[in-house]
Image (cartoon, rainbow, N blue to C red):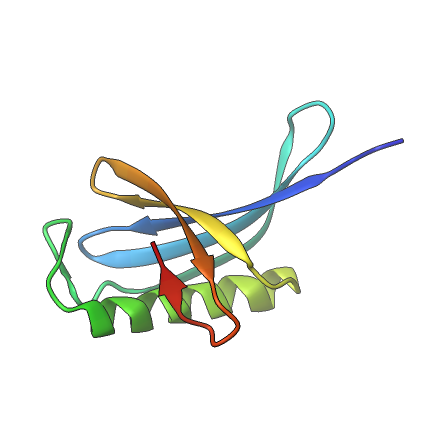
Length: 97
Protein backbone atom coordinates (compact mmCIF):
# COMPACT_ATOMS: atom_id res chain seq x y z
CA UNK A 1 0.00 0.00 0.00
CA UNK A 2 1.57 3.26 -1.12
CA UNK A 3 1.65 6.20 1.26
CA UNK A 4 2.53 9.62 -0.04
CA UNK A 5 3.54 12.37 2.32
CA UNK A 6 2.75 15.93 1.30
CA UNK A 7 5.00 18.69 2.51
CA UNK A 8 5.31 22.44 1.99
CA UNK A 9 8.16 24.88 2.28
CA UNK A 10 8.72 28.64 2.26
CA UNK A 11 11.90 30.40 1.24
CA UNK A 12 11.96 34.02 2.40
CA UNK A 13 14.70 35.64 0.38
CA UNK A 14 15.83 39.21 -0.09
CA UNK A 15 14.18 39.60 -3.49
CA UNK A 16 11.32 37.08 -3.41
CA UNK A 17 9.27 34.71 -1.31
CA UNK A 18 8.78 31.23 -2.77
CA UNK A 19 6.26 28.63 -1.59
CA UNK A 20 6.44 25.02 -2.76
CA UNK A 21 4.21 21.99 -2.25
CA UNK A 22 5.58 18.52 -2.86
CA UNK A 23 4.70 14.89 -2.37
CA UNK A 24 7.18 12.22 -1.28
CA UNK A 25 6.56 8.58 -2.16
CA UNK A 26 7.68 5.41 -0.36
CA UNK A 27 11.03 5.49 -2.18
CA UNK A 28 11.86 9.08 -1.25
CA UNK A 29 11.11 10.47 -4.70
CA UNK A 30 9.67 14.00 -4.63
CA UNK A 31 7.05 15.24 -7.05
CA UNK A 32 6.60 19.00 -7.12
CA UNK A 33 2.89 19.79 -7.08
CA UNK A 34 2.83 23.56 -6.79
CA UNK A 35 5.10 26.61 -6.77
CA UNK A 36 4.28 30.23 -6.03
CA UNK A 37 6.41 33.35 -5.89
CA UNK A 38 5.92 36.93 -4.77
CA UNK A 39 8.22 39.94 -4.44
CA UNK A 40 9.83 40.02 -0.98
CA UNK A 41 8.47 43.34 0.15
CA UNK A 42 9.14 43.78 3.84
CA UNK A 43 12.46 41.91 3.80
CA UNK A 44 15.88 43.49 3.50
CA UNK A 45 19.07 41.41 3.44
CA UNK A 46 17.28 38.49 5.07
CA UNK A 47 15.80 40.59 7.88
CA UNK A 48 12.09 41.34 8.32
CA UNK A 49 11.78 45.14 8.28
CA UNK A 50 8.02 45.32 7.73
CA UNK A 51 6.01 42.40 9.10
CA UNK A 52 2.77 43.39 7.35
CA UNK A 53 4.38 43.47 3.90
CA UNK A 54 6.17 40.21 4.66
CA UNK A 55 2.88 38.51 5.58
CA UNK A 56 1.28 39.75 2.34
CA UNK A 57 4.20 38.33 0.32
CA UNK A 58 3.96 34.96 2.10
CA UNK A 59 0.22 34.82 1.53
CA UNK A 60 0.56 35.69 -2.18
CA UNK A 61 3.22 33.01 -2.77
CA UNK A 62 1.22 30.45 -0.79
CA UNK A 63 -2.03 31.11 -2.63
CA UNK A 64 -0.25 30.71 -5.98
CA UNK A 65 1.29 27.38 -4.91
CA UNK A 66 -2.04 26.15 -3.55
CA UNK A 67 -3.82 27.01 -6.80
CA UNK A 68 -1.22 25.20 -8.89
CA UNK A 69 -1.33 22.10 -6.65
CA UNK A 70 -5.08 22.13 -6.04
CA UNK A 71 -4.28 21.71 -2.33
CA UNK A 72 -4.35 23.86 0.78
CA UNK A 73 -1.21 24.37 2.87
CA UNK A 74 -1.85 23.84 6.58
CA UNK A 75 1.77 24.15 7.74
CA UNK A 76 5.17 24.64 6.15
CA UNK A 77 8.86 24.60 6.91
CA UNK A 78 10.26 28.10 6.42
CA UNK A 79 13.77 29.34 5.67
CA UNK A 80 14.87 32.89 6.45
CA UNK A 81 18.58 33.50 5.97
CA UNK A 82 20.26 30.53 7.66
CA UNK A 83 17.51 29.93 10.22
CA UNK A 84 14.81 27.32 9.73
CA UNK A 85 11.51 27.24 11.57
CA UNK A 86 8.04 25.76 11.22
CA UNK A 87 5.06 28.00 10.62
CA UNK A 88 1.38 27.20 10.77
CA UNK A 89 -1.65 28.87 9.32
CA UNK A 90 -4.59 29.65 11.59
CA UNK A 91 -8.19 29.53 10.42
CA UNK A 92 -7.97 33.26 9.60
CA UNK A 93 -5.17 32.69 7.04
CA UNK A 94 -2.47 34.41 9.05
CA UNK A 95 0.98 32.99 9.78
CA UNK A 96 2.65 32.49 13.09
CA UNK A 97 6.12 31.31 13.96
